[in-house]
Image (tube, rainbow, N blue to C red; front, side, top):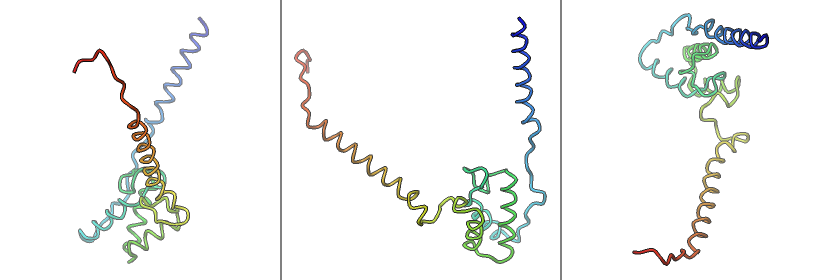
Length: 150
């Protein structure tokens, strides 16, 4: 009976500890909201952050992520826009700082060729395999069943 009490106490402690992290978690909010001059600037900003990846969240854009680094990067992109840099210059700045990973569509280059060519190559190999299977099965005669009525 002593070990069941110990097991129950351990389970309760684990559940309390597991529930403590979400209770302490707080949504990250931008301290000062971005103030756009006009709709064109807002559209340019939103288009740009939609095509940049959050370096922490991995599968979210800067526009979608709520991580603190995403807030910082959005502020950085806004400041770079205000300083007069073009979209290409802003992308180049972020790639220099964080690598090609920050781009949702990385450029074709020496270290990204597999990323671009692998899907087409896999599709081609899969098509060849399927074609060979279909041809092989097409050459086999169909079994004749004597008792089947047509």
